[in-house]
Image 1 (cartoon, one colour):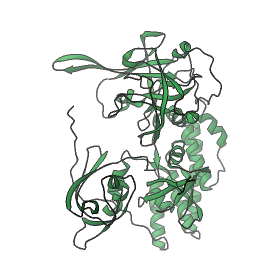
Image 2: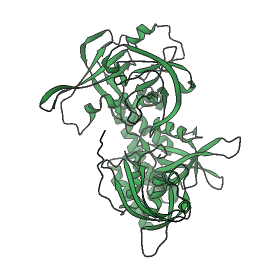
Image 3: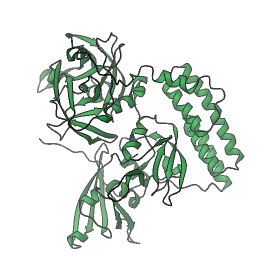
Image 4: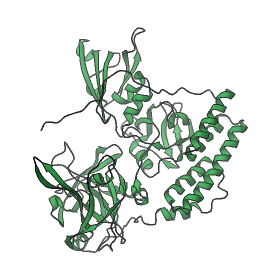
Length: 537
């Protein structure tokens, strides 16, 4: 198969918007920061509250900073009451918890945090620990075929029906349905200009198309919630897949190739395949084909343990399922409606593991911090280890990612950090919107020698007073692109060109090098680096 890769224009310009740290000991700098915060507050009160919180920490004697903090706190209280009145409980909880974490006054809030939280989780199914006694035949009634009608496609002068088929399953009696984002992607893609209508077909009545609508969706973990105005014939209960092990038996229900009511069985082949930037998925050996996507993966007791997805490029013949834990984390945001926006603190790192035979995970080691990003402004630096977030202990990168998935973006959370000298302190971070290509954001906002470390795994120092393109490698990150292509510490490199794919998903770095492992022979080569990975957080 011939594939065409579209590249953006190449260059070695690097950063176009590098952050310069502010000296808050200068009165003019504090005044300028407060003016900037006032402009931020016009569209984002929580971010303004966070920035004034940081200013108060750095300048505890500043009366202006304290006054601004109190003002934005009071305005946040008004926003909470307004959001509750609008029944936007997810955002009301987001602002409430941010106020709470910042230590701002909650006086005047008309609801308790528990009452708001209860409304957020009102339509979210609880975890079931009880084995189902319902026959599998009854469970099949709780699955649907998802049908996206895209009208007619013209090919070589002939018209064909253009449609997308997938699967889904009911999670509530009032018609909420889980499926994959890629099944309904055309319904929510702002760039799609064609015709599309969404229907579901019940397992008991495959002839009738029932109109449905997309309530919420998440392209990063490939999940979506639909709503049909019907009484669900069967509602699946959600399990907890943390106890699933390799070899455990599972079942998949769906409509492979449009064949409704298909049940297949198999085992868990792996519990930690990294296919998404946000975490790991299950690999299963149950037969799955196009059309199964969005259907439930259930255990022997009938509890949903994952959401099946099929048709992964480059993984032909392998089958996967999204763990139900991700679905449970996502449901409050998906049910509240719209696109689920993930968060990050503009950092890059990996699980810190103590050496030795009794090695154990001790947190997330921060390898890189984007200048001017949330982590940087909060005071987190390279070499720190994140050991807790919002009173939850963190021992691994996966735990940190799961903690972020349970939190909305645009909120403030405390992070417990262990420093290089083993002291521990608390930092307040703002969960910013995670870009679709975090690596490209780093390339734009930091100088070349710094950005290449998280992007390619080679830490550089400028090696020439005459050229900004010539560097020497000072450190190689294990299992990185640079490591896998045989680079070593002290190798000299010259960056000749940098290209990106049109969507900024992949970076191509052309460089000249003298690699020690090649006898220091001159070589020109091209490195390929993805602009997203689980290591960005």
